Structures are given as structure tokens and as C-alpha cells.
Image 1 (cartoon, rainbow, N blue to C red):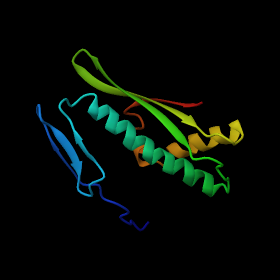
Image 2 (cartoon, helix red, strand yellow; image 1 turned 30 degrees about the horizontal axis):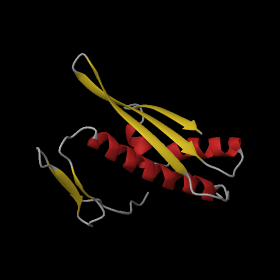
Image 3 (cartoon, helix red, strand yellow; image 1 turned 120 degrees about the vertical axis):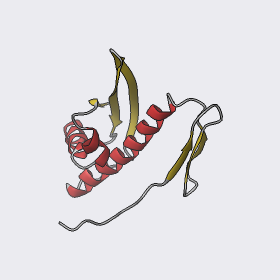
Image 4 (spheres, rainbow, N blue to C red; image 1 turned 90 degrees about the horizontal axis):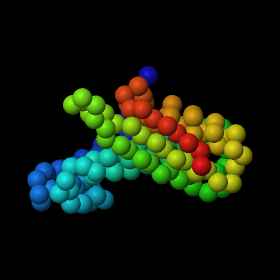
Amino acid sequence: MTEKLLFTGKTHISGGRDGSARSSDGTIDIKLPQPHPAAENLFGIAWSACYIGAIELAAAQRKITLPDGPEVDAEITLNADNGSFFLRARLNVSLSGIDRDIAQELIEAAHGICPYSKATHGNVDLETKLV
């Protein structure tokens, strides 16, 4: 197996009342006066963006044309139990214009492709729903 670096994301975060986050390429520049819900929102955005790419790749591998771009509504919750913190996630996926069984196959296959899905597998309780 030959590893190939595809992309490196670089960010700078500062905390406190005047906290902020920015990416080195300038695509992200936001204020973060509170770490939460910003962390959960950013994680949901990142995972969803990756997951959409994985759906598109799964479709291309199967020679399936997606009439419209996939859409994902992510819900990331921060939970506590006896002083221990953990995340739960729900990805509501819309793949309009294709057969529901094929759409279901694509959203399941995408979890085997998406690096975020792989990284969180077994660590984050996940529900993926085709809407």
C-alpha cells in the first residue's frame, strides 16, 4: 500500500471570552466565545462534508449518477454521565432523485469510505437516517 498525502488542514484556535478559530487558508474565520456548541457544530460540519464526498465516491464506484447533490443535516450532541463526557451523532441524509434502496446502499457504503466515520466507529454512537 502506497500512502499519498491528499490534504492537510491547519487551524489556530484561541480560547476565552474573545476566543476565535481560523484556518491557514482563510476559508474559516469565526469567533468562539464559548467552546460549546461551537465544537459540536464544527465537528458536524466537518464530518458531513467528508461524508458527502464519500457518498459521491460510492456512487461513482457503482456508476450511479446522482441527479442532485447529497445533503446532510448533522446533529452532534455532547453528553455527560457521572462526570464522563461523550458524543452522539445523527446524520440525516437526503439523496433525491434515486431509488430508495440504492440510496440506502450508498449511505451505508459511505461510512466505509469516510475517514470521519472510520475514526468515530465504535467511539461515537451514530444513527444514519435516509430522509
